[in-house]
Image (cartoon, rainbow, N blue to C red; front, side, top):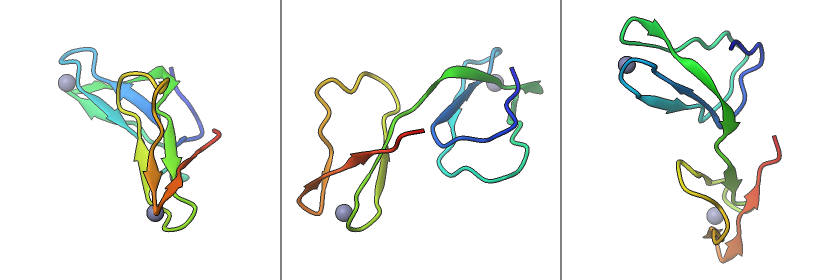
Length: 83
Ligand SMILES: [Zn+2]
Ligand SMILES: [Zn+2]
């Protein structure tokens, strides 16, 4: 599965060793990560990213669910990026 546009939170995995990478900052290039001499596969999920509206810090949910997640920074609840 190929994607033209790189999105923050995209996840690629290696079908050989199971390694995973996630996009922290999306640029305009053609991202095509390789592991074990194999092109990594784009997963059908986006890791959710929350940001602080005061200091612009960002956190990414790597695994697990967000049901009870309430990340705070600078005494405020962080906002969820809508991608
Ligand atoms: Zn690998
Ligand atoms: Zn902050």
